[in-house]
Image: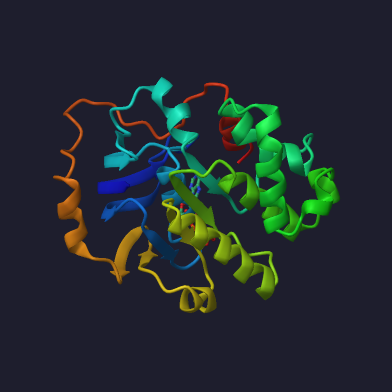
Length: 265
Ligand SMILES: Nc1ncnc2c1ncn2[C@@H]1O[C@H](COP(=O)(O)OP(=O)(O)OP(=O)(O)O)[C@@H](O)[C@H]1O
């Protein structure tokens, strides 16, 4: 479940100026188990919105609730475990360069404390699904862009996250691979994962019909196909942050592979 209550984000200006407002006044609700497309022109704010949903950034205005946690009130120590419940695919993949494809995909399971003996089958199965069973030993630098993208997708879904956010996850794939990937993500959704995918591909949106959020200049300009009444079933909207509560735009710095991804990003 994801709830934005008049939320926005202003990127800080390292030179001390006002900074860049990337998102402003976003208000929407995504129920558990929903599938949502995110569209908008380049620079509209899609990546920023996904990073807020991934809890890699905190809002600088309003409130965001992800999987039952209100970000403006969450302790820093609450964020790494929250992020481990969320799978993310980003445009630059963020694979760890010194780990082969198998170990990159196995990472979320190892972090969750899964025994080596039990994770091998899951990793092998998901690598087979994305068509990379034979490249399990390859390092990221030995893989094509599309292959790296598929490793990133496999890593994001292998631990069956409660929420999956994906930024152009098929941008480097041929049409057959793109449809196969979407079939994997819709299957994850059928099994209960809440899925949000940013895309520029109208063809994919048409092929896999679902509600479509459209951003323009940092604002939500339409949300076609969603049921505004759904919010009723999940309780009242969160109250805005208490006066004087501190909203932060930077992620916390605890050691975590996702954090390493963040620092790389
Ligand atoms: N780290 C940053 N610091 C300052 N401004 C940023 C930062 N990242 C993004 N922005 C700005 O925020 C706005 C939204 O960017 P964002 O990357 O979220 O857009 P997008 O819709 O994902 O674009 P694209 O489709 O090209 O990936 C843009 O004006 C961008 O220049």
